[in-house]
Image (cartoon, rainbow, N blue to C red):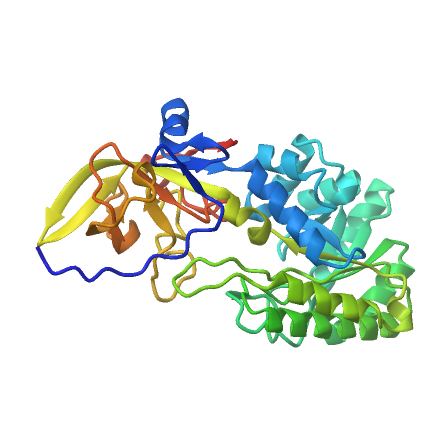
Length: 412
């Protein structure tokens, strides 16, 4: 065997406990869940969803509404659980509109952003009463034409492409040339045209970036966003009823990551709300969060089907892989591959005893869920847990790759 030189694993979210030496999720042992539902399996804990929303509300100003970004996790039981807890839902496709409608969510609580809305999607959103976050002058023209044909005024906001971005964010959604939104200098003219056309004017959607862990960066971006909203409202000549401040709150995935300080963000935002310019005094503000609300609620369970050694290295081969957890494999926008938080679920809390790589069942070297991590010795039949699997897991991975098919999902 080679001398051990394990690579660090990401931090396991707080609050996960062991029952009889096994990982417990929502009070259920991993082995019991796997026996009942099979593997691979995504398990989402309802208590963690509830607690995350409650903690966020406690930290944020009461004036601030909280929206859930459906793209993070569109599993219907998750949406149904969140429906009474959050104030609104943000979607990014006609397919997600159908999903929220099937979950019994009032379309009046829904807003729709996305740079490539097709005419059929626009028509469905207008008919349902969804707020459309307009991404271009061309989309505005198509929306007005469709609404005239339907004989129904559309609810419309403008998605703004700000000149700034969210510093340190994993994905920058604003600043410079972007496919998202209308460049800020063109927004007032478009707003005046839409209002004159008789739309139900909803305001602005200003989203600068996502997956940031720096409270200072988020506070700075929110300050710039509010200042920009005030200027654009003045130049548009209309009251700003709604302003979506975007999201950006990240969660710790990798070694060295620390949780974002939501108390600091909430305090700064409260101070900002206490000193708003006149044009924003009646504005209803919201933030939209997906990963932050759902990410740490989920665990991906996959079973070890083979244990092998190659050139002195141990490989634990599972029945899952990147076709369900593309992000954990390092193939979802990661430049340098680092290990997600993971553990041997059936030996949870046991002392690490060996260096091992956890790999999936696919015929590609990209299919690696943990690279040379330090784990308790595991055998065929043991369960592996990949944490932070509640967002951008099941629906953001190529489930049909190599004919493997989707994993089962369950809310407990």
